[in-house]
Length: 168
Length: 147
Image (cartoon, rainbow over all chains, first blue to last red; front, side, top):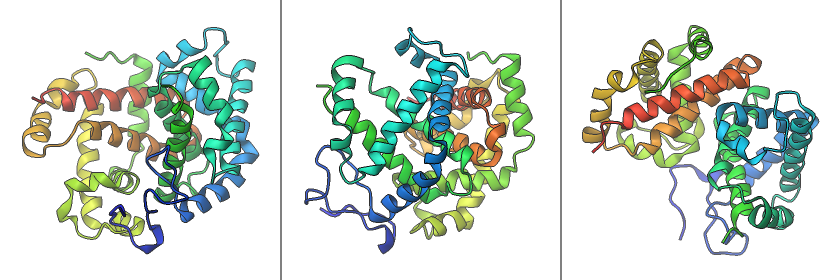
């Protein structure tokens, strides 16, 4: 079943159920979207730690309920805990980008950790994804076109799906 | 009723004063239609929405985006009274336009992201938080009269 879209040939949707379409996720990245992500990550990776840290800062400021997962952290802006954890988040995203054709494989251990140890409620992945988008948008406004925004939104949805796929 | 602190109100009002409503409105609606193409379902009569450039350049998208964001400006003026301010619009979106309130959240997040691209470093986590609170409150106000 080919998904109908109102886009032209340059944003051809992959056919569901064929090799290369992920069975664990509901969306797949097109070639064009992967290209966008790879090239933008080249720029983002030079500031990856800062981007990860700022995304967390934004998360805790806009959605204070997310702080309940970090009672053991000093979450004040600029704290060492925030910077360390921001760097971890950025590194995981980098891993996903480097294995963009097999994100589930790249994040398998992290997925297990979230399912069995961390057990972060799935709603929070959308919140962090949104804050990551805001961070990238504010740091790279010229690159963050509507198409790039779409690609990153999809990429983060896929990452979120992978991280919650073992929950039950 | 949502309570905004003096700092939150100041953050919202001062940024809003710098917003080009026509430009930003068009970008916000355009992005909604590009990033979440299923939202195009409400705009069958808008003409060519077949690509990013078609959507972002579409004059109906720009005009409607301006209309939507102008209405949002009303929220900025009535931050303490959003449910009443949007009561009529809420009924309209339910009874006439049949819009799933989930879309108000999606649009609110588009506003945030477009503001981030325009204001960059000025769009600090604290400024974002104030705006996040406002867009959530507006979304709730617009959904309040649904039945």
